[in-house]
Length: 189
Image 1 (cartoon, rainbow, N blue to C red):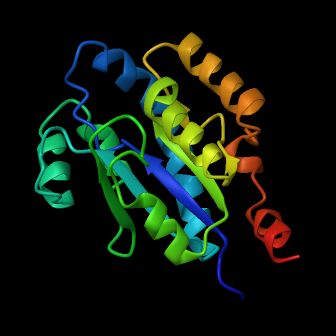
Image 2 (image 1 turned 180 degrees about the vertical axis):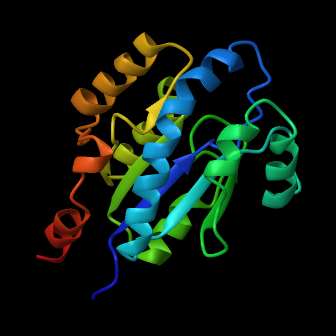
């Protein structure tokens, strides 16, 4: 198989969910996380790299393990336990909403030879949307499975999906229907 041209981003899933609105986000994330885990497993089986892009929660030491352990002590631990990074996954720490702002994400994607991004995670109407916008501006082809992102309010999530689909030209096919082989073949044709 040739080198993958696709990467999967898992955005802010290592999350404390201990903020105002966090309980609603947790409620909406719990039904989504199993679909996300299933997609991650398919992606890894296809040889596609997985990159966690996560808020630093004010921790500037760039230590993924510390962030994960801190989040595991909070209400979001039920989600975290299901979607922990594997040893061969990448972990990018971000200071703001977009995974591209103030991070080495774009450099990593270029070094990996990535043209397509599968974006997943929380909150759909903030960090996933902002990351999708910045990815679109950098001319990545976007796949944002509409059933692998969650927000505090379903209506906010639905609005974000519409913006991502209409304005950022993303494919929002549900995760189980996403044809990873076809995505890769498009770029190797």
